[in-house]
Length: 390
Ligand SMILES: Cc1cc2nc3c(=O)[nH]c(=O)nc-3n(C[C@H](O)[C@H](O)[C@H](O)COP(=O)(O)OP(=O)(O)OC[C@H]3O[C@@H](n4cnc5c(N)ncnc54)[C@H](O)[C@@H]3O)c2cc1C
Ligand code: SF4
Figure 1 (cartoon, rainbow, N blue to C red):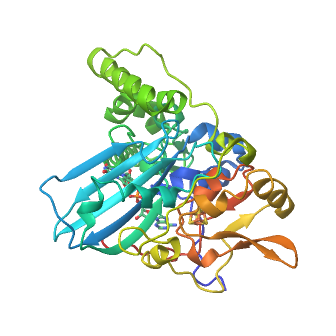
Figure 2 (cartoon, rainbow, N blue to C red):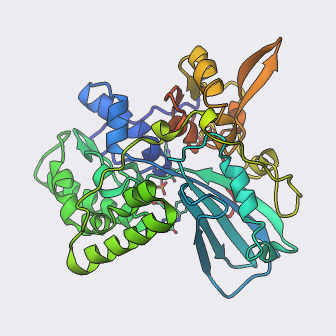
């Protein structure tokens, strides 16, 4: 049964994990920390080390009305101005278009349905014509870390270090993560080479932790550190405007009126009881421009062996019913981009069904469950989504 199961991480002299989606929930980093130091990581570690936010979905279409504009982006609509998010759209080669919709996972309304907002976005009069005559090709979803400078965890431990998205090095306002991933790999390689050359082994290469804030990575993230907290606190119009201003005072004068703002609540804590919010209507999919979730998941080529070890754990089923269902109206049935979670009536009772087979490994459930009652663990090797063209 466990024949394909990979050990979580081998802690050897040079363990340098860089897995963007993993950084979101810090599962491998925390595994490594626990292995290396013998301590058990707490939920507090997760919150403080990686402040996380984002849900993104992509679909690709061909034969669309291809434009010379290479890249388009937007904030807000169809989200309200208190809910962070927006879109990106890339015109690619071979008459293809990649479109994505982002929802910041600190949203409050448990009725919010990110996949449906993505479908609604495509109906905007400025967007819909792009897809005329097109065909849906692929679909996928990922979360990425957005905490930035003030949320980067301690990067080193005996025998290894965190780099790239495992460390949460994405520059969110500039939508750039690749450059810091590469730079952090180079920094780690340099410091490890120096350590090995001086005869060291299995110790903590503290130079990486001590020096990264003074490198291009640290300077890049420091300049934009207040954009996300301002957006979360003040909403899209005021928050993004002030965030932009702050970014430029940092860029031009190395100065911020705000110092370094904190992020506040975690994504899980941000969710509010359903009674405080109104339901949000969903569109009926037309199969041309808007689609249902399951047929989209099919295009992600997600696959798991039937006898795989379970990688989605609900710690307390009673709590899930009492709180996730009764208080929050089952947000997992909406935030999961793959339709994994369902509340189904069986013999007069609401039963929580987990369609693990569909899991796209985006980790939104682990991040957003209001009670932190769902635990995503690294699945059996080589399983999950096999994205095409993305
Ligand atoms: C929708 C979306 C849009 C983005 N747009 C941009 C953009 O326009 N510009 C930009 O600069 N950045 C963008 N980013 C961010 C960028 O993709 C990441 O910051 C960058 O890829 C991080 O690189 P990384 O090497 O740290 O991690 P990754 O690129 O995620 O690489 C990690 C690798 O580890 C592998 N892996 C995971 N688990 C295991 C395991 N157990 N064993 C072995 N291998 C494993 C993964 O398959 C993956 O190949 C975007 C991200 C998303 C999700
Ligand atoms: S079950 Fe969790 S990790 Fe899997 S696709 Fe759904 S939200 Fe993402």
